[in-house]
Structures are given as structure tokens and as C-alpha cells.
Length: 170
Image 1 (cartoon, one colour):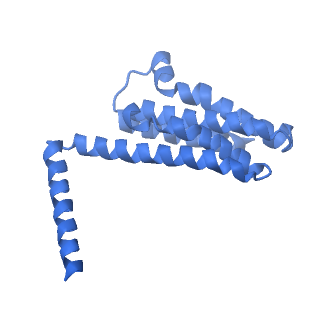
Image 2 (cartoon, rainbow, N blue to C red):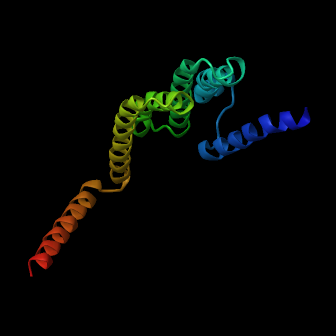
């Protein structure tokens, strides 16, 4: 039983330590705990419950429970990362990725219906595209004087395109 406790509480203590290092000094109270960790306390356990239900109780028969399990688990992770790092403006495409994760779990553990790959791929590509655009936008915007950096990148890219074209013509 001691190994079970350390397997559960060890990662929790590590995550709390990392959180305290990231956030600095926080007045610990019940309200602050709920403020920062509501996804871990409420949403992620429900997603894990659906997975546990499928793998243990239903013994791999009720494949449909993996869709809400994957969606809730992904949404919980996205919300938890957003709460800890306060970056909702970058993490919101994770909500588009959540149904793709649930459907992919249904595809992977189910009968591998190839038609499920169409919405999975569309949602995944949209999510990754938005992650890339908003991450780069946030990164460039956080640099001091973001517009001159963008202008310099555009100028360099344009010059490279022109010189590459001239080399091909000769």
C-alpha cells in the first residue's frame, strides 16, 4: 500500500513544487487552491473515470465512453495549463483538439473505421494551425517593439525569395 501512496502523492508533490516555483509567493487558501486547480479537481478525474470505466468495468465493450473521456481529459489539461500559466489566449485551440482526441481514441480502440479519420484530421490540423499562429503571434508580440521584428522578417523573406528566383533564371 505504501508504494501505491507514493505513486500517487509523489507526482502531486512534484507538480505543486513546480507550481510554487513558477507562481512565486501565493497566499495559500482553499479559494486559491480551487482557483488554480479546478480542472485537476473536477474535469480531469471525470475524463479518467470514463477511461477507467471502459478499460475495467466494461472490459472494452462500450467504446463510446472513450469519446467523452478523451474530450474531458484534453479539456481538463488545456484548462489546467491555461490556469497555471495564465495563457488562455494561446491555449484555446486545445478545445478544438479535444473532440479529435476523443474520436481518435474511439478509432484506435474500436474497429478502426477509416471514416473517423476525416474529422480527426480536420480538427487536428485546425487546432495545430491555430496553435502555431497564436503562439508565434504571442511570441513576436511579447518582444519589445514587435512590429519592427515582423517588418524585418518580411523584408528578409522577400529578399531571399527574390535572390532564389534570380539564381534559377541564370
